[in-house]
Image (spheres, rainbow, N blue to C red):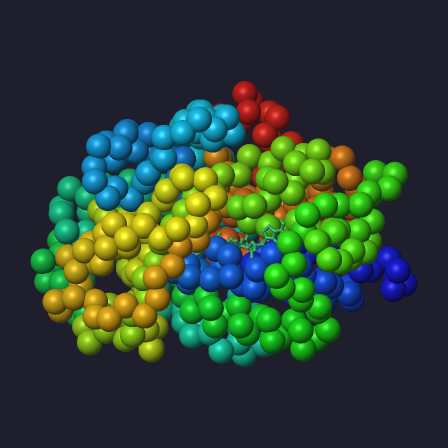
Length: 423
Ligand SMILES: Cc1cc2nc3c(=O)[nH]c(=O)nc-3n(C[C@H](O)[C@H](O)[C@H](O)COP(=O)(O)OP(=O)(O)OC[C@H]3O[C@@H](n4cnc5c(N)ncnc54)[C@H](O)[C@@H]3O)c2cc1C
């Protein structure tokens, strides 16, 4: 491979772009990452930092629509669709509603399972090899409940997970109190997954920046890709306002913004931005020692040695990145019902980010159907961190023309033109 043919340009410096660069580098590519903002400042910044190989069930489950309908009448609900006329959103919601079946959910679960498991294995070896200082900890996670009804309801998920060989252990009130003394004594019980990990996302992205640039990756920040130059069915360069960056291969890893770029390339990518919020505090006096899902409130709590983060909510309000104080407050109001102590202390960071949501719960990792040297790696929903390394490796294999380490079919773009057959 000569220099002229192994220049790859990655549009988007989030966790997907970062791991794609990592594996391309391993295969001898020269990589440039172009980001319209700072590297790692998109959805990959203030997320909850959970690496969840077991989180195989998508949002589009039977029952989701009913729950969403009920939430429409609840103040500060964790799910919100801003009423407006937007054809892409209407189509997306329509397709999402059609995917809320057990058949479609299990089909998504199979695709998610493979990518999540593979990514977890890769995370273990990356952390071992690269020694990234990001508070990586494989200590499990808990789903905890205040009511017996909700604790029992989670059993249905546990049964589905068992069919995939994923063990989840029940903890009654006393067992939960023994396992996790930092939680409120008022809880009914919990469910424990041992094979999950967590890290501090900002530290991961800082570490990846240092690692990649240290090995020769060029990172161009504050450089928005506006256009593509193409010749004979190939993109030959990407254009920012100021620069033209040539590349033999182009990877679009622009998260929630991918549809706008893909459209320029003649490709429809059904991704909607799903806005989520987080608040970060210093270390709490009384807090759980493992990440906890407060499912009744759709809030996730992540503890680190020097900090604590609460995250959640899913707001379909377009590309609006303003902070809604009501939703931020809802996170802490919910959390105090689950953790010991009287409050969550001083907030050090308030954040929101746009998750790249597909309506079928699966990411898109595929070659563009129209331009032979363009690859799309986006739409990782609520699990882009957890799916990052597997995605990066798969893209690197596609660009190198190697047999893929996992079957890429579930992540193909083609599925969106086959809706009728896949529900
Ligand atoms: C509250 C919250 C909690 C979450 N918790 C978890 C979790 O615990 N575990 C987990 O696995 N996932 C979690 N997620 C989901 C995860 O954060 C996302 O799936 C993931 O960050 C997506 O990564 P990405 O690289 O695709 O997108 P991003 O990180 O958004 O990166 C895309 C990048 O593309 C750049 N870009 C866009 N357009 C252009 C352009 N025209 N030119 C140049 N650059 C461009 C953007 O600036 C951005 O930096 C959470 C998300 C939220 C909101």
